[in-house]
Length: 204
Image 1 (tube, rainbow, N blue to C red):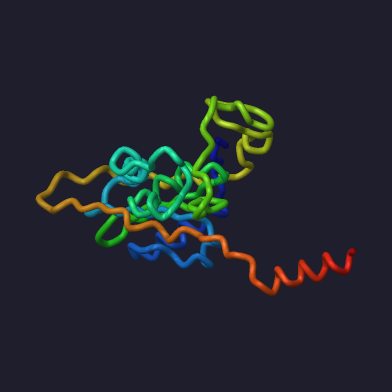
Image 2 (image 1 turned 45 degrees about the horizontal axis):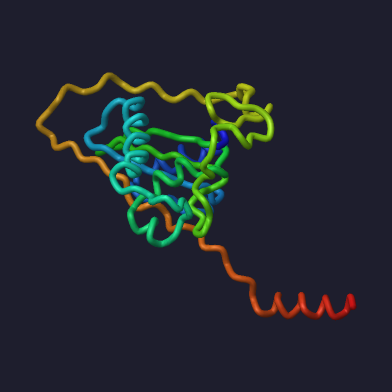
């Protein structure tokens, strides 16, 4: 399992969408088809706590709904509503970028992941001894390479939140909507298959 690194370009996608204050997933093209998790809570509260709560909420899907033992994303697993968790642990995802926005009626958290996870028919992660298949190095039971282990040259610090507001009688609501639909690999077209057959005949 690779160690995630923070990416400022991916963060820009999250910042742009969070600023809209619309509790829905962004258009795939606007975030370069990176993966995306979103979270909201009302009323507005501390940004750091909102970021922490969102991560806990997404990861809690494992304990609440489970993913089974196969670890291959299929319609059965997806139907359980674990898309936020599966994106968080997707083994081919390498970088992450997040944003927390104070909106008029909610704290809005957006995290984007690159490469995107939730590819239908693919494995969430490979089980086994930690770091047993790392191509280079290991850090805290996660695979790292030379570039990932170095601190980025420039980073954008997470904005500091204002002190948490006193408890009021307002109803606290929170939510994580359905994840974007998983990507289903397209089967090869008949034309491409016929071309391959013709090429083979020509070679003979």
